[in-house]
Amino acid sequence: MTRRLLAAVIAAGALLPLSASPAQAATPQYRALWVDAFHPGIKTPSEVEKLVADAKRANVNALIVQVRKRGDAYFNRSIEPRATDIKGPLDFDPLGYLIRLAHSSSPRIEVHAWTNVYFAGETSLVYTMHGSTWGNKANDGVGSGFLDPGVPEVDIYTHRVLMDLVRNYDVDGLHLDYVRYPGVTWGYNASSVQLYKMLAGVTRTPGPADPSWQAWRRARVTNFVRDLKHDLELEKPRVKLSAALICYGGAPFSSAGWIYSSAYSGVFQDWRTWLTKGYLDFGVPMNYDSDWNPQQKAWFDNWMTFSKDNGFANRVVVGVGAFLNYPEDTLAQIRRALSASTGGNRVLGVAIYSYGSTSVYGADEFYADKNLAGGLPRQPYAGGITDAAGLAARGRSFNSKFMNQLSNADSYRDVQLGVVATQPVFVGTAPVPSVG
Image (cartoon, rainbow, N blue to C red; front, side, top):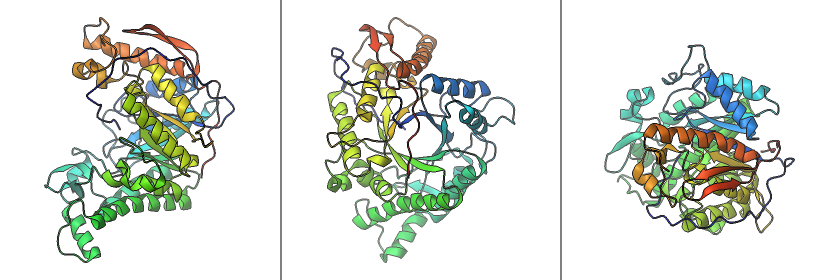
């Protein structure tokens, strides 16, 4: 889910006054939290209870919870192995317990099952058993923990896993991640290339930049999403299909520029088509940018403009990368995401990445890496804390406090600026919007 951070950073400037009021309580909008399986969230009964309590405290109305991380299951009724880091009795079902608590909460909280699609990891059972024939490869023969969308058996198997999940659990949505290729040079699994040659009527192995080969790989991913949506409509029509979408770097300035985007041309994820044709109920562009960096701030705003003003704003939930920002910057990004564009268009809401990494102080990407932390504009990052355990404890404190900052006026102590006041974005509760 995370993006490689830019090496160059700028010095922190003065805090700007807030220019927009918080979202009104009565406005239907998605206020979602991504809950990743690399951090605490649903691995014990007490974690589930805390998660639901935190969501209520923050006026969050949807939890996008990672339940298939590496070909495993954070739920008991699965055709794949139960995740090994679940703690508690064997009859503890993380997803089942979360659904029970979230749905009985007042107001009700939606639960969306977040699943990694083509990434399985090299140590997973499915990759151990089938990696030699299903594994994705680059054009130089290097493999990875990805499965290849060009192999029909991969799509059949993955489709079965996901449909089995929604049949067995009362989830509100199914959320797809890694539903793409790793990059332009990938897709060279032998059987995938052979299938392409047969269908295209060619004998030579195509190069990565071959337009027909790129279009074929792009269509493989699109067809998977389309077929999954079709079967969900037949069997569980109330389950909302969504996906985490790529939006690296600069945004297109118009629909015509979409074919040059990082998603379309870089990883063969044609999510604009998925949204305009209704293959997704909503998409979540992972608009992970640091607001303290002028270039990244412009990227964030330009992607929001593209999402709002190109005909599919009613199917977009903006993904905000809290882990790359200071708390007040994340709150500012949420305000801008929820505001109308100059054309008067609004998106469905926001999703925050993530529950376990709510700021540069709460993210282990930073507090576990001195070099990375040293590139941030406010120093000294450690603020006098000399041990790793102390930094981790500070991180947990920031993550907990952020749940209150979302819904109430608050403040925090910054290493450079001292006390920083924050203003809420989720004042009062809000219903989820209608989709589809």
